[in-house]
Length: 250
Image (cartoon, rainbow, N blue to C red; front, side, top):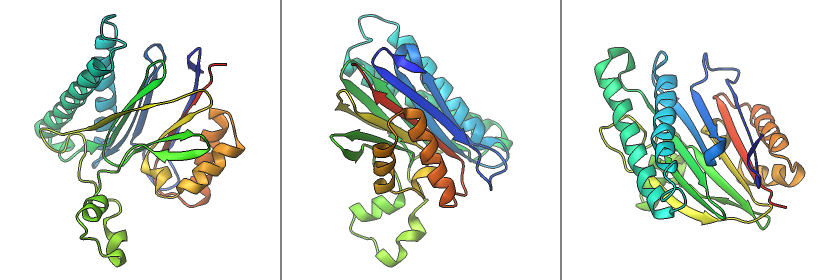
């Protein structure tokens, strides 16, 4: 499947061998070159509801803005409305969790990618990730909103205890009435790849392994399937979701 004449994309999601349900959600809106991925958390079906509500709400709000011709290619306008959409989705998920005891405490990570002619706008909340493969280098565009990174930034991390903070996130959609997403841009060119993934992949497959898989398998479908296979081989116990985009404008 193709996002546009110059892009190829493939996404897949796997429940994994341990979890009773899949709380990951991804969405690809081809006509707007817009991709999203979310990893829900919470008891019962709450994580799945948080992720699905968040992705659907953000995409619905943002696509309404992108239909306006004067704003659809203006980077600053898109960033403003992307931030606003994430804020509104956060409040929606939070309000749902407050109104229904069965949904109390639910939340979700979120990653968003919007492609323009030669610039990608990316946003995230939590520890799902976005990578950019360019000039044979794998760049991690996002920085996990995690306690581990927070302690590193504050020079308060005891390396012996680092594993204790690995999966504790400091930001999520829906766990508080407001949230501040991280939003930025990066330029891209023909032959580049972008990868979006939940931590069911990135907790088990390191950057060197991701780099090698991209080098060996050129199509987005092959890369996504082999990334999933690698995570399974390394005994991932979580839901695994990955989207791979290839810039191909030749």
